[in-house]
Image (cartoon, rainbow, N blue to C red; front, side, top):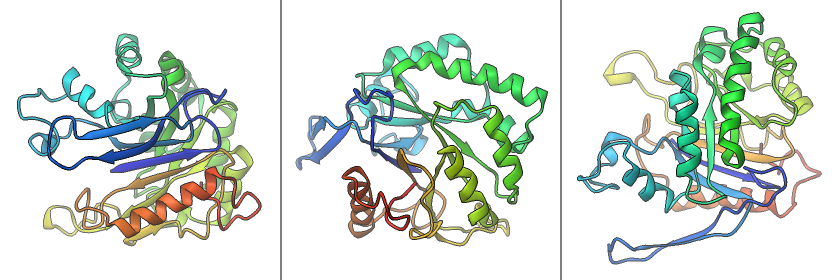
Length: 289
């Protein structure tokens, strides 16, 4: 999915000194230098979940670039100022890998959003016990190796995991108070005031997602479980954290399929503009989390 973040302060540094993508203008003509970018605002990040999808070769990357290569990342990071790291969902990379990510960041403003390991979200389903605490400590320590390039930690819960607000609340015993945490829920039962209260109490961010739910490979199983197609939660319902917004756009026509039109993107842009300019600070219907 595509992602967008905005914040009242810098997303990668508590001091607010990091810069970010303020404006991107694509020049017509198809030359290799077609993108004119200005990384000048500490409040906005635009990027994607991962940067080396197979189908990007030929359409975004030149076919000669090896998947996951340094050259692919250089191309990506010249046009975007953040990326979600999916590898951390499937395993826990060694220290050398984290240091490599830090070293390859092209500028101070470049931010890595780290997806929480599936052990926490899918295996334990947020049950905080001794094993959870031990693994979380190791995971969080590895995240710190990114230094100024560490952005929010994204918890993506599975579609089969129904609402359990108490388990969510129990995370406050292990998640650092100075960290930034985003939660993406994939079951509709989570979108309720009980959950929003927990998020607000801890200043955790509720990801606003857009998806088109459909069957996987033509079968009967829906890729997003019981979720209805469209925005979740409804835009007027959620306002859960003070520091930022987080959008995940999974595709208007299917799982990672289709392009969003200018009108939809303009609506998202206006929400981010209103948040960063301070509008809606007193209204829970205007500020997005």
